[in-house]
Image (cartoon, rainbow, N blue to C red; front, side, top):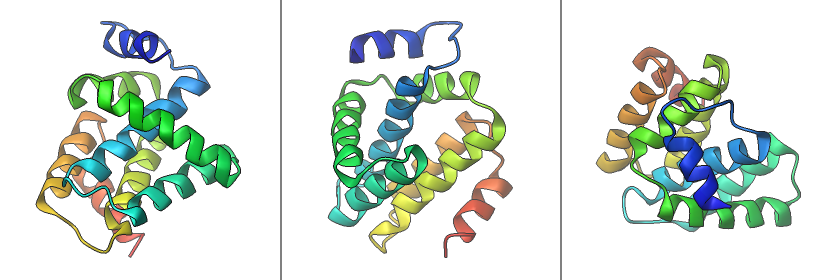
Length: 143
């Protein structure tokens, strides 16, 4: 399952991601930003579960199960450039902005903004085609 998704993400001309793949792609990005500072905190894990649960109308159990799958995908996924390109090419701007807001909610979940997290957020926002101003506004809307 993950190999097929990774293949589609790295395809030179990706199609629109089907909903199950979009769920995995979003979740894997959330996991990637949470792990970027080498401290995958319980607060970040809980926030990922909340984001996935709310976005996809999942029970806490279903959200945790999806997060587990996303953790596996993130560990196997290619570099962030290819990963985000697949999302950018398949998702409209408003949804990409929602991805950035969700990622900021994970970064802020443990109460500590590490340089690695900020750096990854700048890269991901740029790769998703989200402006610095919109990313900053998304972060500020959470505080």
